[in-house]
Length: 75
Image (cartoon, rainbow, N blue to C red):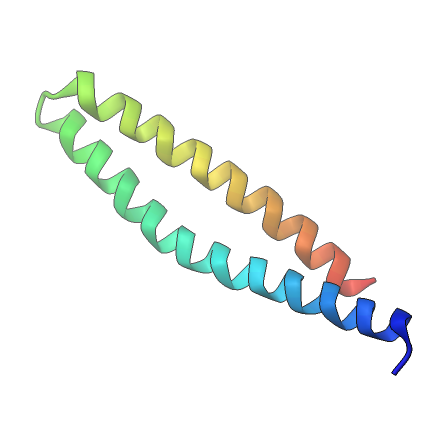
């Protein structure tokens, strides 16, 4: 196999791994957001709001990296 073909296969596997990782992170992110919302609802706003923002940041990161990986897979 040529080096170019090996590099293409390696990049494809890397993008697939990123998409799988982001699916797992999404499940964890739902848990983080629900904990943050529960804490805010129970009156612990000092802890709940930063946890919610952490969940929003993780969601943005996973969404962006998934979009980039899927775009590269289609090419």
